[in-house]
Image (cartoon, rainbow, N blue to C red; front, side, top):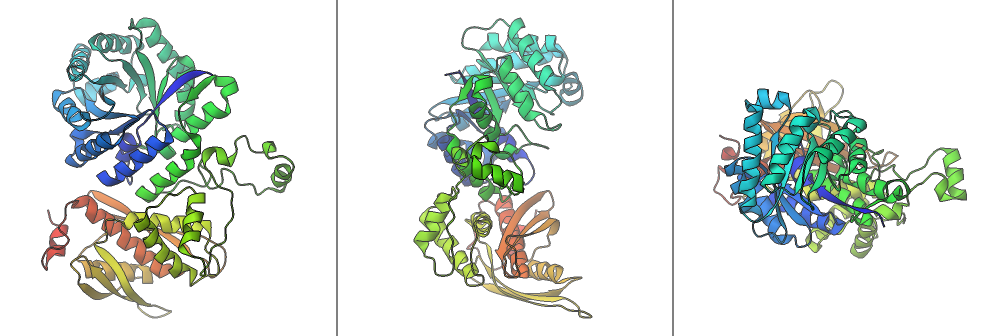
Amino acid sequence: MGTRIYVLDTTLRDGEQSPGFSMTPDEKLRLALQLEKLGVDIIEAGFPASSPSDLQAVQQVAREIKQATVCAFARATKADIDAAFSAIRYAARPRIQTFIATSPIHMEKKLGLKPDEVVRRAAEGVAYAKSFGVEVQFGLEDCMRSDPAFAARVTQAVVDAGATIINVADTVGYATPKEMFDMIRYLMDHVVAPQGVIFSCHCHDDLGMAMANTMAAIEAGCTQVEGTINGIGERAGNAAVEEIAMMLRTRGDYFQYVSGVNSVELFPTSRCLQSITGVGVQPNKAIVGANAFAHEAGIHQDGMLKDRSTYEIMRPQDVGVPETVLVLGKHSGRRALKDKLERMGYQLIDTELDRLFIRFKELADRKKYVTDEDLEAMLLENYQNIGADLFQLVSFQVVSGSGAVPTATVRISLANNNTKQEAASGFGPIEALFKAIDRAIDFTGEVLDFQVRALTIGSSGAAEVSVRVGWRESSAVGRGVSTDLLEACARAYIGAVNRLVLGIQPRLNVAASDGWMESIFRD
């Protein structure tokens, strides 16, 4: 049994801050419950002072989570700390993480503070947070571009003020593993801390070093690490929780450390996040990517048939990746679909299953077999629209061809139980379709990203379309799946607009009188 490493998951805070990954309070709660099932020690649920929605989300998570510590993020100011405490005060295990930047460039350019003032504010922030009787963690923002002696001075001040967890943050992903190791050792050697004070690290991946720096910090003496599911986060993201957990498990012979993460929940947790955000991971993503346990090269296949350990250092089952093949088609029933989804790592409630079953039957009527890829794409489409059905596609028709002006006609079901039909033309059939939808819902969106993926080979295969739609400073991703590419495009676009509206008007009265649509996108 090695040294225990505590895992703080910041998917709901740092991860959610990155473009395209915003979540509603209910979505945050759903992911938090899965994180607790995963076995992370601390869930950093959000930044309560940043918005009323984030405050509400942290409050919901704090009330529902029973096993993990729930942490709220706050700058070293009384207003932020007050908001953080109000959010986590009813948690079974509450924690506040307050922070301030310690690098010269941040102190001068961002804060406009002298070093002495930074030390004072850090200590006062910790003392104020401690006065609420909760566990207090202090973060040294941009620590890896800080002078080690000054970082140690700040650390000593906050430890004296009552902080029991010191978080060394490589905020911009600047460090190398040796520099991370040296910084941790310097702080531990130069700070006089009472027994029980632990060091943590928070690593970003701007130079692709987040995972390496996290492991270097552990070797230097950190007994807490921070990360996110699928490695999401600001800019290039954070160290990935699934990679940290499986490194400690798989290379226990080298590191001699253990975590409390239940590894078989890694794959389901990854899928849970993807279904909530509508953003997938690249196929070659370590641990949870589609190709993580796939083998195509002949020499690899030959070795695998002789002994799996020739090319696999982990078993798929260890991270919750299923291997069972169950063919689904138009004659398959609801129970078969549910069993298949559970084997794939998805647990759906009855209403979610009912909704997906309808889409499954629609697709199964059009193609011979429904594949795992089809199901996962439909799941993403299914989840993104739950609770956001302001607009639904009823029917569409597109006329296009050589020498003809592409024209689309759509009929859209509105949230006030009315339907509206509009037509539009465009440079191509997809643009015409999007313009017709815009007219039907009184909206003008900007397509920021458009991707098409063939889910299966063959002319009868389904296509998955992903569309990011922007409006002013907001954007949202929608997904659509169909054997008809244009239908998939329409579903994806409407899904994105639904999520966009939900983000702008989370408390929108969808039963309002006629003219309600015209007010959605006004100031």
